[in-house]
Length: 409
Image (cartoon, rainbow, N blue to C red):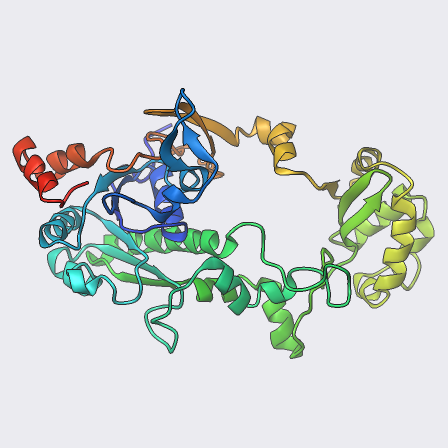
């Protein structure tokens, strides 16, 4: 194995909350040096988004929420007030040395500080500058603030998530995590890597304009295509799938399980497993399109069968027949799952106050340049002096003066 792939890339992370920090963490996991610039006093908004909080050996909060910990591994925190001219100059000097800058201020918000793309491009033409906003750099909504919950509603995701109207508990429902933020972070990291590769040929950086709404619409996937080709807006179907069947949850004797039948061959194997081989030859069910047309009949018949055994019994039987199936785990169940444990998805790092803290590992598996875990999510301003001394050559006396003047936290 060789060193991490992005070991020579420097990232200046001016972003907060989730989408931008998720992108920066991904780059950090791949080996980039990530300098997280935070405002003195409060830092990233999510530091306060608790409980739960990270606590020290005495049970006292350390200043980091569990939410903050999910998106800020492999970063070094520098606390700079760039509303002050001296702070702006420090950030500009850091940007001169960096390959990538990530920010998620409102459109045009950094121009007043001389930290927008047009200003920094003059100082560092090779800079890849990624702006993450709710609605993008142009259009009638460009000035609006955007949050994941809002975007899940505006982007159509909530209209297809949840139980149908008229069913108890029916109505639009958001996904249980800020999925649009996370997907935007992943798109951002992909776009940054593409821009860095392009720079190898052109010698120039570029501006990346990423909007949560754009990502939310792009990730509607097959549901967007269902609408564009039929001109009929998809409706909420609970856990059912609009295009393949049976592909949803089913009741069992002690709970629920998932069947995820993706083709006619798997359906035939399901029929054999549940002792209904004739269904695989029945013109109502033999082909997927027919099963969709006779959805209610098939689902009713399957439910009458699945309630006769426990979830564990069904999974054991169906796996023998090669039928995709599984339980509906709680998050506690997830971290007890032998496959999750075998893949090492729970890991830990050393925190300066709390000792060993748990984190979720990166899912990226590279055979030759694996991800690396070098820094636990940092405390506010933990690396201010070290970074500014190493990268900008600031003396202890200069750092002290900046701190006295409120430029540094």
